[in-house]
Image 1 (tube, rainbow, N blue to C red):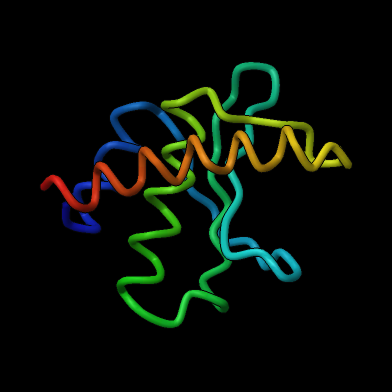
Image 2: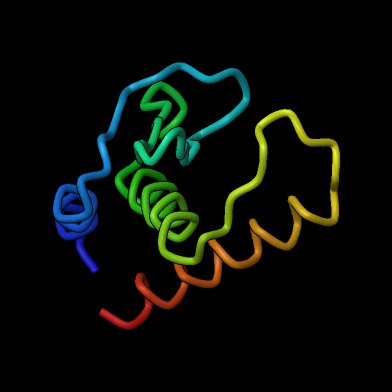
Length: 96
């Protein structure tokens, strides 16, 4: 799947994308009061592939309902939700 296709998916789903310099994070999916957004740290995304993989993973959080509170320390929950999002990413990137 092309990078533009991922941005088109986000637009279709009404997910806003923001350039946000998040310390030590490439991207983050946010859902707050039914508002969906993806923050991408473009300063950390060095290549087209980095941007594509990060955006696909963040869309995976949306599609797989794989979210968790940003302030959680529950490493099991985090690992489970990250696995689900990455699984969606791998399917999307490898199948198109």
